[in-house]
Amino acid sequence: MTTEPSRVVIVGASAAGLTTATALRRNGYDRDITLVDAETRAPYDRPPLSKHLLSGEWSEERLALKTDAELADLAVGIRSGVRATELDVAAQRLALSDGSEIGFDRLVLATGVRPRMLPGSDALRGVHTLRTLEDALSLRADLRPGMRLVVVGGGFLGTEVAATAVGLGADVTLVSAAPTPLERSLGPAIGVQVASLHRARGVVLRTGPSAAVVSLVSSGGSVTGVELADGTRLDADAVFVAIGAEPDLRWLAGSGIPIGDGIECAPDLSVAPGVYAAGDVARWENPVFGEAMRVEHRTNATEQGMHVAKRIVAGDAVPFASVPYFWTDQYDLKLQVHGWLRGYDEVRVVEGSFDEGRMVALFRRGERLVGVMGIGAAKVVRGWRQHVLDGAAWASVVDA
Image (cartoon, rainbow, N blue to C red; front, side, top):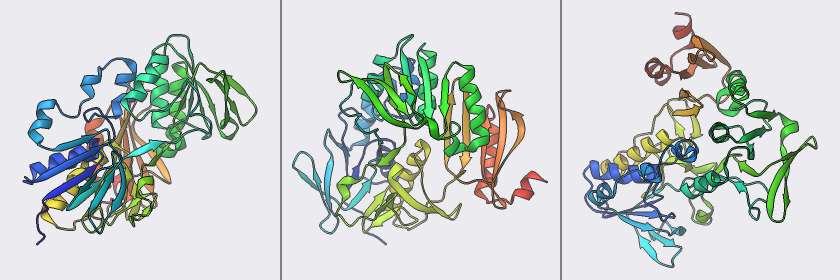
C-alpha cells in the first residue's frame, strides 16, 4: 500500500495534463495539485485548431477544455506562462523559467510535442507551423481568397490545413516527399483515395522524392516560395510547414529520465520513482499489440491521463493497454481509425467505398487484425474495435 502523496505536480496543461488533474479529483484525491503551463491562456483543445478555428467556424472561447467555473471547482493551482527548465528526481524538485522551484511527491510529465521546422524558417515572415492557438490565428490572418499557399507535408495536419485553406478560397499546393498523402498513417491504398479527394477539391499535389522541399525562397525577410528537389520553384504568399513534431523534452537533459523517441516508460507509464508520463511524450510497451509505441492523438492523451491518475491514487502498477483511436476531417468526410496500422501487410474494404462516402476497411499485420478504418460508419467501426482489442485472427474475422 503506497502513501497518498500530498502534492502532485503536472508539467503541461493540455489534454493529457488537465485530464490527469481532473481524474485525480474524480478518484478522490483531495490534496494539492499544481499544473505548470507554458502558455498564458486557460487550457484549450488542439484538434479544432486546423479546422474549426482556422476556418472561422469556431470562436476562440469554444476551444476551452473547461469553463472558468469548472477550473475553479477543480481547485488546482495553475502556474501559467512558465516552463519547467530542470528536474531533480532524487530531491523531488522542479525548476521553472521564472527562477522559482516547486517540490512534488508525484510528478506527471505531459509536455506534448513541438513542430519540426524547415531550416531558415524562423526569421521569415509568412512561414507558419501549427501547435498553439496563436499559431492558428497567425495562419488564418494570411488566408484569403486567391492567395497562394504551399503546404509542406502530407500528414493529418498538412491535409487538414490544405482542405480548410482551399475552402476559404486560397490557391493551395501541397508538397510531400511521400508518394501519397497520409501514407505513413494509413498506407498507400488509402493515400491514393485521399489524393483524389484533394485534387477534386482543387488542391494541386506534388508528391514523391522529387517534391521534397530543399529550401525556402525569400525576399526582404518574407517567404516567396519553396524550391523542390527536382529544381522546381513554387511561388507562395505563405508557406505552412507540417513535417512532423518531436517531443518537447530538451529541458530533461541530464535529469536521468530515460529518453529515446519520447520518454521511455514502463508499461504502467511510470518513468522513475514517483514520476509518470502521459500523452504525446510517452513511449510505452502496449500489451494489446506487444510492441512499444508513442501515439500523438487526442484520445490517447486523455486515456493516459486517466490511467496515470488512477495509478497515483491506487498505487497498482497496471499496464496501460489501449487500442489507439484517431480521426481526421477531410472536407465533408470524417475518417475514423481504431488500431495501430504501422507496417500493415494488407488492407481490405469490407463495406462501401471511398467514393460513396461510406466505407469500412480492415487492416492485417501478420495473421492478426490490427486496425479498422471507417468513413460515415462510426457505429460499425466501434464494433470492430473489440476484435482489434482481442487480437482476433485475420481469418476468423474476414473469412468467417
